Length: 353
Image (tube, rainbow, N blue to C red):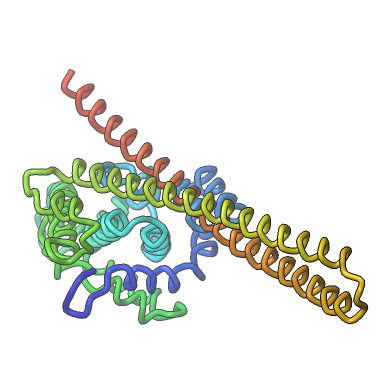
């Protein structure tokens, strides 16, 4: 965990609680503009929970696809950016996934919010103090700068009216100019967001700021030769390995509990059988009554013990089920990241041809 009073996991959990109430409503607001893809996300959210709904649109949020897919899927360029909805979805996805990927997506959304391009049609309607018409590049740059200046204010206005807006404002704390996005173009902002992400990951989870069990993650974060995509892949792979170890350990514990339950039940049944045998061979009425009471008490103790052990085992089995589900979600997320990176690379190769 991070030092100096900053708890990354608690931070994201706070954001998740604040954004969860708005997730379904926010996605519905986007539905008309985004069509069937978001319909599937809504159905996933309703039927399988928040994390499954977020995973459904993981490709849209993939850091490796920032330059086009996020802007296109959220209709950022020709329409109102819908920044509150985008942030709500991103925060929830971050809270549902491992901490490293959560931070990756969180900073990715910060970057997109800070460098969102405005509606190109608005350029023609902007007043101009200069008599000489602006070139397309100048107009685009000016429109982008004005859009960036409006972005944080628009988000904060929407957030101020929402529940738990204080927690969400913490998420918006480093939006925009604070991270150096002012004055750079959209493509440059994407590269800058990646560098900022690397710095943030190392700042929060660098050497000495994680548990000893995460020494390999420390080593990955300390390697400054890794590119953004490689770091995300390696972190996700490590998290999946940890999830597999957790599932294996829980399965072993469940097996040990089951074996112990069977052994204890067998021992109690043998004790009861011995007591019943003694009861059958006893002729003294007082002794028989004492034995009968002891047998009833022993049987009640056996039944109570079995019931308690079954409840404990059922709870452990439910924990194992949840761990398996989370592991499956992370494996699917990793597959999505790899597919996105592959498509991005192939697109670049096709452009070269």
